[in-house]
Length: 274
Image (cartoon, rainbow, N blue to C red; front, side, top):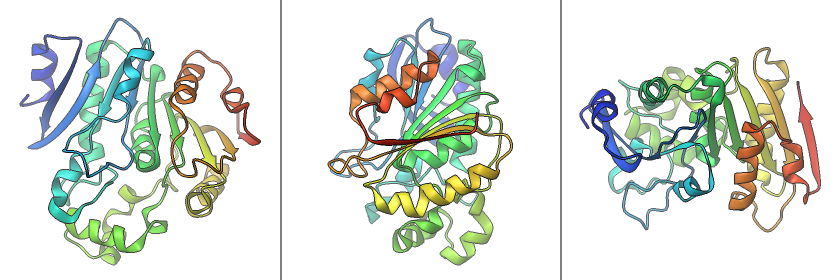
């Protein structure tokens, strides 16, 4: 579709795989719409380059949820050619933040489906976390679930981030830090949304470099309402939780259940500011 308006006017099915152009950038996504007043927006973690692009992570959850669902693919990966990048955090280009462009798509979909922002959940793990928080901050009262996420690319793998900055921004990392730090970190973000964040303590890299410093920032945030769960699962490490547990988490957020109780089988530490 040439734009999001064209998609919303011409779509014939309640579920499909489509692509929509915004500012000459193609955003592929898979969706399933129904009469629910709630929507889950899935944002991708690392992409397995053994597959052809695009793929839509957690689209297999759609049939298990009674809500509207969308899974987006990150078009930043189309920019990376043969470099083999697996994650790009919707960084975009010098000219356009792909989070900004994605916001335009989501805003119009919510209006078309008549969904209030407090009934929106951005669901993410790993590389999906930064765009999830960036987007949730723009929809007052919305929710973001983030599991084992990166929170600041300057604390990620320097060689990888340096190469990605050259592809996306055509800048060395040092220059990109001053020009585009707002796209690369959520440590300074503070807005009216509800954050549900979990971290496996067995994933020590993300615990020490991303979760703990971000949690220090959260404690001084005045607008974000958050609950955080630290759990320990040596077997899965950085990998996501089991599908059944992630679905339980989604339902607990929307149906005002207990986020804490979802982790009942684990040894946990629960932290909350509301």
